[in-house]
Length: 127
Image (cartoon, rainbow, N blue to C red; front, top):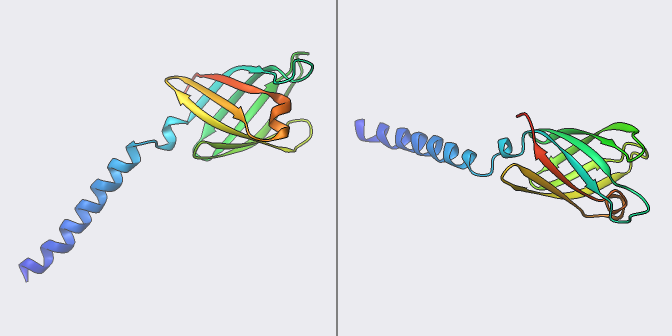
């Protein structure tokens, strides 16, 4: 009977240990925090300004300050490196791909709505 009990216990310990190791690799905490910086317009006639993005797991919120100084807030979602940000003025989905390099997050446009706003290069602030 003792030999039978060891196998389930070893399986549980192995599973818990593997789960802990996996959670350390590319976990959502790599993305979590407040990021802020500049938006570089794809078209110099429109877009640009600055942005602040706050990420908490898959949920996020963001604000955009246009070159005119007008600031607007909106919701967003993150799934891995894919971001869907609501345009603060129109509510249309802007799709971006994010890439972290040290304490910099670069959001690259992936659809026409995002192209109108531009590329965002944000620096990590508070976590």
